Image (cartoon, rainbow over all chains, first blue to last red; front, side, top):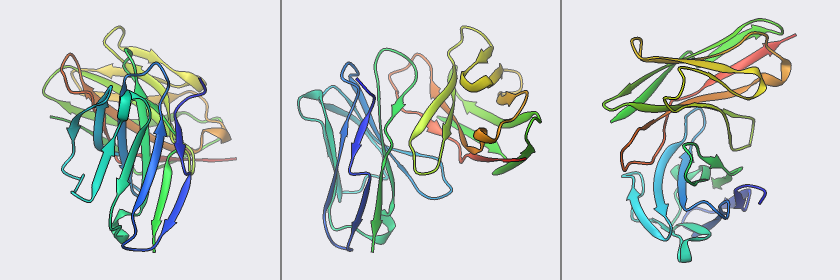
Amino acid sequence: DTGVSQNPRHKITKRGQNVTFRCDPISEHNRLYWYRQTLGQGPEFLTYFQNEAQLEKSRLLSDRFSAERPKGSFSTLEIQRTEQGDSAMYLCASSGSGYGYTFGSGTRLTVV
Amino acid sequence: AQSVTQLGSHVSVSEGALVLLRCNYSSSVPPYLFWYVQYPNQGLQLLLKYTSAATLVKGINGFEAEFKKSETSFHLTKPSAHMSDAAEYFCAVRAMNTGFQKLVFGTGTRLLVSP
C-alpha cells in the first residue's frame, strides 16, 4: 500500500455548487479522520470514523457538510451549497493501532 | 482539553546553523506529542512522536525533540540546517489513554533556511 490517497488534488467550484472529495486510507487502518486547513493555520479537526462508524464531529462541520465511510473502507466528504469561506485544503488521515496519523496530500478547494 | 502553542510563526536560520522550533502544550491528561512537517501543497509528514517511552525522541531527517513535563514543552531541534528543511512545521497533541483520538495542532512555524 502506498499511503493515503485523496482525490481530486484540486477543485475549483462556483459558489452554491456541491462538491465531493474522496479519501482512500491505508488498507489496514481502521481509523479515518478529516481535517481542514486554511492559509496560515494548522489543520482543524472535522470528523473521525472508526471502521464505518462516525464517532465524532466538530462544530466546524455545519449541516452543509456530510461525511461517510461505507463498509469502513474509503470515505467521502461532501459540501453542499459551497460558500467562499469553504475554500481551504481538506486533509484526510488514517491510523491503525499506532499513535500517529498518516496524512494524504489533501484536496485544495477554491470557491469562486 | 488539549492545546499547543508554537512560539514564532517564522524562524530564519542559515544553512548549517542550529534549528530550534518551540512548542508548549496544555493537556488535562498525559499527552502524546507529535511534530509534523508540511511542504507547499502537500500533506503532513510525521517527523517524530512522544509516546512516553523516552523523553528524548529522535525522528527522521536528523530532527529530535525532548519532552519536558515541568516546562510543558516539546521543542524540535536539529544541529545543522539544510536548505531542504525549509517548510512549515506543526506541533500536535493528543490525549493519552482515552477514547479521544483526534490530534490538536498548533498554528505552525515556517522555517526559512538561507545559504
